[in-house]
Structures are given as structure tokens and as C-alpha cells.
Amino acid sequence: MLRRGIPDEAAQEVLSRFEDVGLIDDAAFADAWVESRHHGRGLARRALARELRTKGVDSALIEEAVGRLDSEQEESTARELVDRKLRTTRGLDREKRLRRLAGMLARKGYPEGLALRVVRQALEEEGEDPDLLEEHLPGD
Picture 1 (cartoon, rainbow, N blue to C red):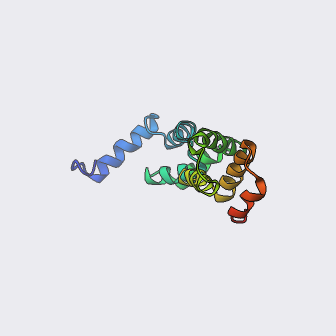
Picture 2 (cartoon, rainbow, N blue to C red):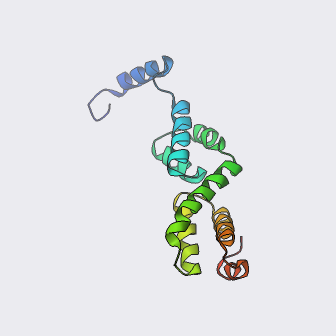
Picture 3 (tube, one colour):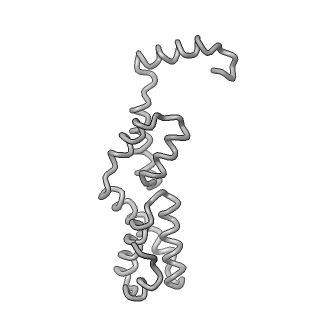
């Protein structure tokens, strides 16, 4: 409204009225955003919080919305992402696969320890030697 030359006082009055009648609901927006972006793009809590901050959502509402994603749900989504990407890394050397898979999770906001654990498990299940994987992983 500022860019359109609407006085600040009038803009605040309109926005307050919109909130009163339920047309603006930051909490509902944050919840919907988290649900959509986590299930649609596989984003982790950290990335979701960052996106909501850039959209101007209040910190308390962000914490509440991303707090609805529990650790098990986040790990399950990370595992699904790795399982999908795993096929595209076959044929690459072990270290390169590890970097690519963990990097993909990191870009989506997953913590390093979780990313490395999920990737290690997926590679072990695929038949990679767990002792060789340990050589290339920093401490969890």
C-alpha cells in the first residue's frame, strides 16, 4: 500500500479490519506454508523458518508452525528424498555420492548429523561397505 501512495494510517486501519474479519491470518498462512513446502518440496524446519521470515511472519508464529513437524516426520521426508536421488548417483564413486546426497539435504535445510545418518543408512542398505563410509563421514 505504501508503494501506491496510501497513507500509513489508512493502510493500518484497512489491515486491522482485514484481520478482524479473518481475511489476514498469519498463523494459518504459516501452517499452510509449512505443510505445503514440506510435503511438496521436502524442505526441513530450518529452511521453512527462513522462508517464513522473508515473508514477514512473526517469529512466534514461525516457531509454532515449524514446531508441528516432528523429528520423525522430518527424518522420514529426508529418507524419501535420498531414496529418490540415490538412483541418479549409481555409478559414481562412494565419496561423490555421499557429498551429493548430503548436499541435497543440506540445501533443503536438514541438519548435518541427520543428513549424514540418513545418507549412510541408505548407502548401507544399497550394499555399500559401512566401514568404508565411516572414513568419509565427519563426526556426527
